[in-house]
Length: 149
Length: 264
Image 1 (cartoon, rainbow over the protein chains, first blue to last red):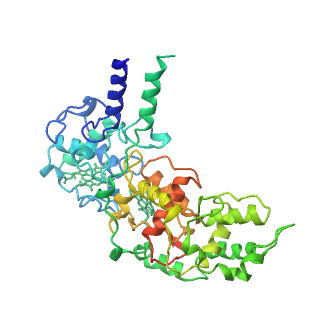
Image 2: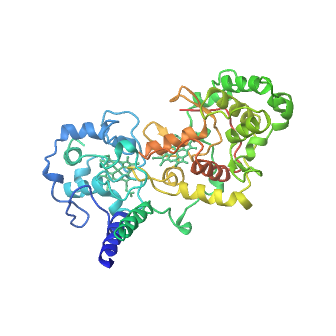
Image 3: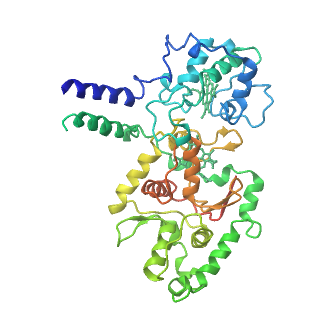
């Protein structure tokens, strides 16, 4: 009985603790502030990444971020500009910031796009899925680390 | 049956799993010196529309509400029979809502008060949120407080409601895992795409939104913000939204009522 209860407790803790026990949508290896390997082994495509970045129904990152020279009106400024991001961050660091910003900065308003556990009252249509797929995130990483961004 | 115990434990614990709101001492409140209406963040032409009683589309509902207020439903008294012609006795009243109803002990917003009058004094059925009649009556009654500074009582029986509303405001939710304070305390004035994030005051509502092509209640606006972070919106009239209305009113204390406001 104790064993079972202990087990129940650990399930509870795993699902509840927001920061230390932060869980990605799939098994992900974190090294420092980076995820070095691509998510689910997917290869990114910068063209598609541009669409994920701007499309209202995908990442819609322009809600909060601006990129100089990007032909989209009304880009947001809640987050920092991401122009030439590849000059500042490695692919692994960019991947980590998109997949799990709240793991690095627990208080940030930047959503964690590759997370589905430990969240509160997620809308029915989004339940059980991360906000972006591994493929979409890899496409973003390719776009943001390319000289185009 | 013994095996059930741990199973039940798992479920109860899981149910308790919703992230706790941030602790009281880490809640950064909006400084009173910063208090600013959402009106200030609107485009000039939207402000002009709100300011012009003849062009402001919200007045369609206010005028309809005035007519409903004056008309005696069959076998019953008109609102005006108790509250004066054109609601003379209700001037300023809406600025002090939500408030706790003495009879039921429940927190009551303007919509709820109108429905209490219907069921208690007029022998009528309550009206649903976002029906034309309830929006019109709410807009009319609230508009009688236009210019009046918000001031609500959060002591005594209202205190638990206030705390509950505050908890809601500081609790992260949805797939984006964001709380109201993260946008409306920490990031107001910044651009979220085409919107300038305001401080999230409710003083314009019921208000007309271009996005709705209609007048809508404050709770409709709250549901939009919940949906915006990909959280499941709560039902209209839920205790949590009532509590949030009270928290917002206290937080906005001193700002004038703007009903009918015009927003994007």
